[in-house]
Length: 459
Image (spheres, rainbow, N blue to C red):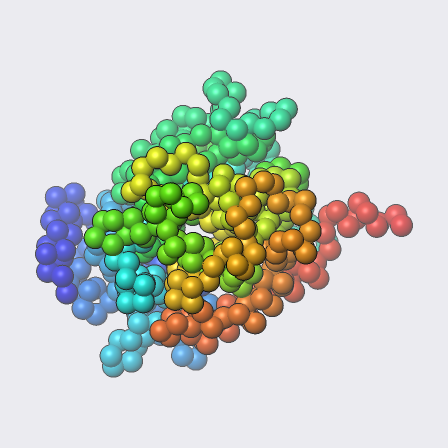
């Protein structure tokens, strides 16, 4: 037990007259869950030493006949939740089993995220990874959707409608600039510092908020937190936010682009002056690992059927397993505008926010580590560099990302060894993940679509 951290949290409880303690965690697919406990003397000490039991089967983790699990708060994640009426101190929690040793649960993404950086330190010598997420999302004024035996529909209403790309649109036409201002202030209350925000290219209310760099676990926590903040704030404003990769036909999709670099003793290991894009050999091999395993990675970076409606040519979405400077059609883009060696980096563009961020970032780290250890040269592997548009190149020239979730799962079945390094992704986790995703594919694949009525009803 970290007694100093415990004392700091107890001081917050006393100073702010906290009435409720809230423990949060996400299930395997990324949905957020929580449990609230009224404050009583020494509650935090009791939670840290004993935890609180919960039904793991209801989270999709365990079978109903063996479903008892334990949540234990991570005291370093303490934050006062502004969306609760009663004064509430919120924590992210680790998930433990109920055996005598209170073993960490192998499908707990936060545990995997912590271990990922330990594996990085042991294998390639970096002491910290730095991740900068970009959040793309739409704001709608009204949303209706339903699926039943005799009906299936969605309908969205939007306060904005631009004739063409709305990228960096200005007010008064940028209707939600004040919303983003206020959202950034809320994010700061949760410890998330925003780099900038703006209107994105989508013509029907697409937004972007980009955040500053943090380590792997904190960045994954921040992705969960940012969604929580934006969902709740939108509800307060009687608006609707979605991070769906492709919520509207023929409109720009929502990505979760991830900027990344590694350091050792505060020195950027990705920087090498005079090389292509000033990238070091280590950075290129890390990129090589990401691209070589990119198809299998898609099962975690783009884990929904909707993900692949975004990953199509023509909407600045990455479609090719290539890298290049300033190239938004490649999976890996190296920003051209960086002048600071300390922030030399690349951006991995395929991910979207339907991902479980802990699994997504951990899988990316393991792919990169594999690239470094096996000296995967992206040039020799045929991944580039390509600085022009790759959307119109053929499969004989470049390799492309999977076209659908089923192809991504097939790729994972053929290429999962890199995920198993140091026992990171267990058979249990991989099997459960594939099972869940195949059930999603089957459910959606067997359901009549409204467009099929338009196409075939009178045929």
